[in-house]
Length: 377
Image (tube, rainbow, N blue to C red):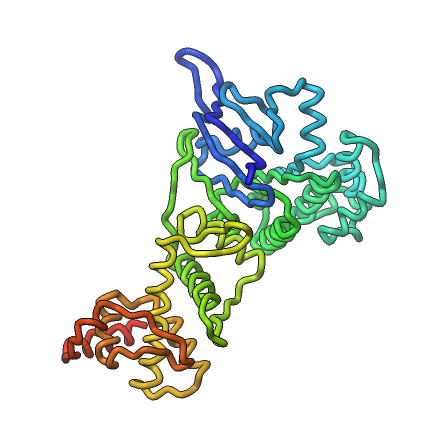
């Protein structure tokens, strides 16, 4: 699939000689249409400079930037302004609303610089962010969250393919942050490409992919939290059960947007493939999925056969919590203790382990180790 946004060895240099500053220093990356990318890093790492380059508010000192197949370096100043207004919508931390214009007029201002104003379309944009009832209010009569939503409506009114957001919740309280992120998630679900600068780790987790910048360069970061790894395991379990000839399919609680975001991240780190629109395993992902399924189904057997729990919902819930703390060694000991069961309580096969061919008998240490794991869970 051709990249929608493509940067090739892009640099942005300010000053010269001893005063030279490389705000962006040889960055190369691509983004697909509809992808949500979070640009993260400490202050001074080049995040906003990179966003301005992608938004065609600034031009690279070196390298190439292509958007939708257009090399922006080939455009004249007027062509670049036109391209920017037709392709990109901006959402800034400071809102940048004109104080003497009401909410509707601030949205229509973006139309004016694009082509011609259309009151109906501007009202529709305000409605999309839940502010049609505040259209005649001045910025001073709106809360900070409402001002940011007007800014989002202004970014949307020309139907851009790309939304660029620079710390869009930096001046908002927690409730308004949630509102703005919900709006951005809705826009992402519509297929818009979002590039967002943020310091907020929780905000970064909403994105399909995170670019971590240090001193103007991308620093690869493939470290994920325990919660994120549990989400990856849940996706792998679901994909595994899809491949089995079984009526028992592992359920998940992800929305379609959350599912695609996880799949995109897992594709980036080499766990899954998305060829021909179908989600599948890489060899690395297959091995991890097999181990997750083995732990989960052995845990189900443990809770039913050893601990005499018969309620299916309780067995499933307990197994989901327990599977994440089992080491390979404890998993094999648990399997040995139960006589190497071949199927889970639903009848689905339990993948074999090395212990299943060694015929080793359980001992007291096995039972003690396993019960300690249960207590920790």
